[in-house]
Image (cartoon, rainbow, N blue to C red; front, side):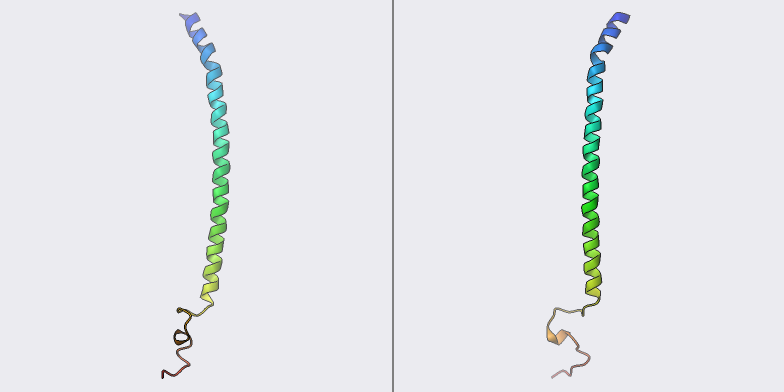
Length: 76
């Protein structure tokens, strides 16, 4: 019985090592992908914040003259 278990162990050990190595390679690839996605998200977030800050300094409205400086212009 011990020889059978030993024989089975000798067969499955290399398979188990290959599966572990494959898992390590996969984990590295996923980690790299997640890191890249995080970088892209940070860039997108920075761009959105920049645009938001720029829009705070500009007057609100759709850009037509009747919506801009309405306090200083008399309504005709």
